Image 1 (tube, rainbow, N blue to C red):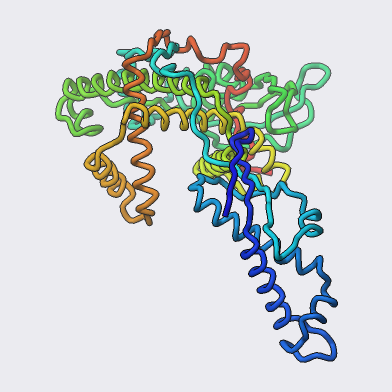
Image 2 (cartoon, rainbow, N blue to C red; image 1 turned 120 degrees about the horizontal axis):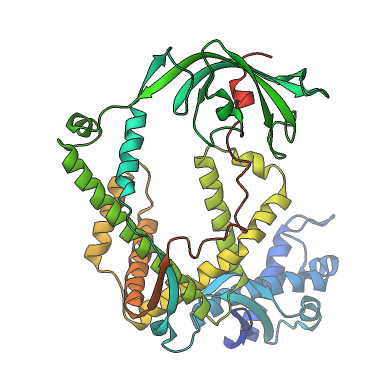
Length: 472
């Protein structure tokens, strides 16, 4: 079988396949025999219909089309095997089917033209990956990290102690009854807002915890005191009844509790860690946070290198690969949402349009990922980089221990580990060659103008109204 290849745009290959007359004749005759055995024609027993009647009743066009479809399928499989083509996805017919049917002669060779996506080779300027220049944020260790961690552990183990001899203050926990009222024309409390009412609600008196005004309004109140606190809710507040409205909160302070923190002593160190003294715990925490800062900086450098690798790629990507990567990214997003407790099925119930929108939005990331992956693979081959069998086994064993009890596809596990180890080795090498400008943390992050406005995210009002309300 004669096969002529043609390179097409977007990483496609075109094939012109010349099918010998002997093959055409054989398939055509087999089709006629099969139809003769299976076709139902009144007046004839199944399998006993004369050949001429079968051809007359079904028509030459139908029989030729059936034979040509079988020839196309068989010849494509043979051509891929013969030419050892790295095909992705399915073939598309470039020949005109109607013309093939009209001109088909079982006693003559048949020539067909098809096209398919092929796995692309990374195209890039020679040795350009050895001259990468990039910027990355340097994460510096902060001594405050240890104190903040210890403070967090203190607060987890804090004891709430009732307070009776002073007013509420920042840092306390207040137990309150609350109700909300519209603001009347004279500025006084008007009609009650039924959706906002509750009793024995616990309020942590911390800045930025609730809608502006609530915490400051409660601070300074005495037990059994009742107070009206004016509050303006954000326009995008999730409860429609108060969104964008001026509201008067009636707060009755019932209890004040003070958070008593445990001492940062050796007993505390034993309680929160495997260390016997606070000095040992602090030293270990300091090392952990220093290592963490170094690792985050290294991750930033490698991310910057990967981005530059994608920019060095100059070849074409097949549409099949792009669609497959989009599907993977959407599936990954769905899994992350499920881990957050969200009902992903509810999202996809919105129809195919929503799913297509998610895929379209993931397309730029999919293209960037594929370019980077192809570049890493090309560099690994060029520089003869590959993990050893011992490294692969060690990492596979680690993952098996980590996911003990879960079903593991061993073939996919080995492929994943081999790929990730190869990428790590390539990036380590590129890091040695690259010129990286380290910038202070936050330098490459979105500017304040680009970031979402979180002035409105100051909390849940005195109230996560729907979750905390005790009364209708």
